Image (cartoon, rainbow, N blue to C red; front, side, top):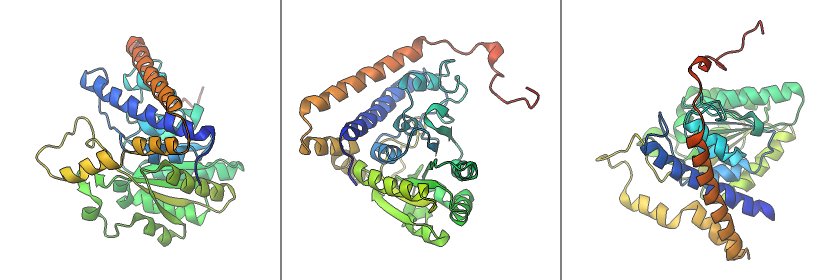
Length: 326
């Protein structure tokens, strides 16, 4: 299934938003404007956007420590998102979530979780909630190849299959858990085959092809809404940066220069999709207009975040818990 009509341009816009936001975010982080950690998803934009566009705004989503791209692809506003990374009061979590613990109920983001595999059982629980409530909402669950060896992955897939929960498990297989390759840590490197052990479909797609991911995700969502249960999608993708901005690996050849340069040169998802749009007859001016608009939007988000206020000291305990007496 191919993206069509205005959705084609929206896919390109969201991919560019992720790329621009991440690149500018890394600059702000290095300039000490963003505290904590910063995990870039540059290179993985097609896997993220292709999946999210198959879901509705009221569908739920859980993500990972590499969280900004997920939020942007699901429709979060760049201004409030950048403000959150800077710890500002006007951020999507009032400055309390930061880079790795984002949530935005307005677009269905219930949680981005820093713990590896931590969002998988939350997604299963959210899908169970939809089934109990009798609504047709579907949950999208992002996780990486490193999470596949966590117990939460196996427990959640088993329960989701047993109860036919409306959830789509999407593994962003970028090949490396920090510096450990899939070949070094997986007895079965074809991650999609693990789905068979729990009685659900397992699908592998080219994670650099936004159309391929969108097609697989659309089929999985249709299946879930029909009450047929979960699907495991493995999107083989690639991160162009190190695990995090703080964790720059030097002197450890965990991936070759040849491999890295091949992906940058031949497998950049944004370049690939830009070429697809032009081949489909979208004119160059329309493409450039989107690029200029996104670049301006990222600049506005940074300026908005920089001038926004920090939370007041006396409000720091706010939003930490809900009193049963209130």
